[in-house]
Length: 206
Image (tube, rainbow, N blue to C red; front, side, top):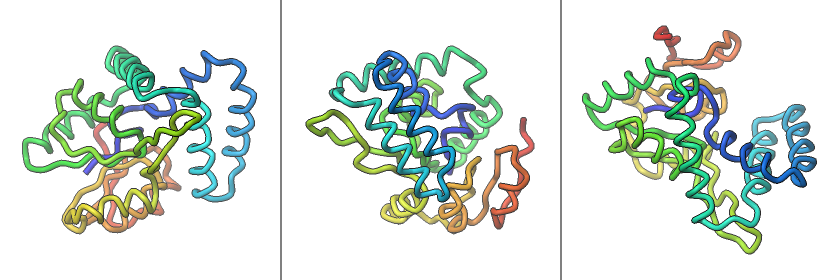
């Protein structure tokens, strides 16, 4: 099982999409900066997640699903055309895992965006469990933000054998999932963060 952002990619896909949309709408940048400041000084993972969801809602305000899908396609094209945005050794690890058996990509990124990127990387047949959008009168926002405890819940809902899984992640927000998995491969670069993971090894592929 693999996370997406920071594992298969070197940058957050949803943040990249939303950042591009906000830069096209300077009138929203002031609100975005305020949310980013709150995020920077958030005192809990839950507070960070609330800020992230608010930033997504701000970026997607007034958009239809067709608008969003066009933005997602632009983001995918950007990621596959710029090698620095991908992590080749981990893409290869994902491809090898697909040959060996069922693979799940569990991500906080939006599911359509994640699936399209994986299709472009040649691994479109993996199961993707990600965040989902809802259509509201003001535009799009997260219906389900697949992060932290909610990511674990979405995996448990599918009755996946987590105790037998090897989980690749770079983020302590995935600690609930990592704790439930048989083994974790930490692919980040933060020694302090690594100490929070049990049953874990450090990725040595890059």
